[in-house]
Figure 1 (cartoon, rainbow, N blue to C red):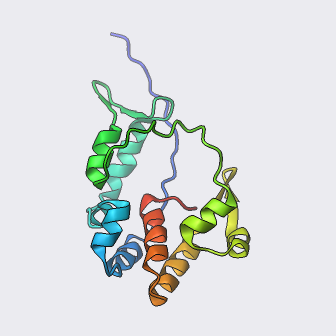
Figure 2: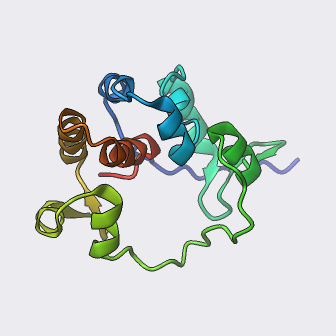
Figure 3: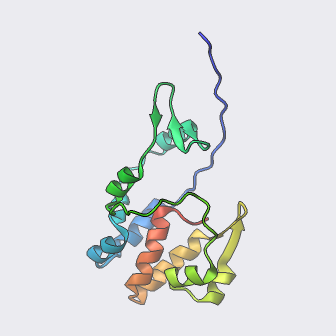
Length: 166
């Protein structure tokens, strides 16, 4: 029997203050409105997270094939499974192949309800990509709840739940 050795890579998972994120989620005054735009993302906040399991599972992730490779199995979550989990309909559009251009500042400004000058001042480069810092997004989300701007608050909360920050 040929025994192959598995090369391991070190992954650093983003550490997010889940309690703070859950607290923000509890500020959603109209869950129906949030769900209409972002699916069942709020329910994901209630999922019990076993950090050790995630750290172990990531060791089996194959970035080349975008799946989890186990000795006798391959685990590939499909878009349909993801959409079912989140509660969004599967669209007839081609999924993101990863070749999309970096979003323009004007697109980000509209999506997150920010001022252009504010966005440009807060964009940071990490890993060669532009991103917004977590504490900035938490501050803006809190501000939008105080201003009763639900649309802006929901957009930033969804971004935080998806983990699209640095």
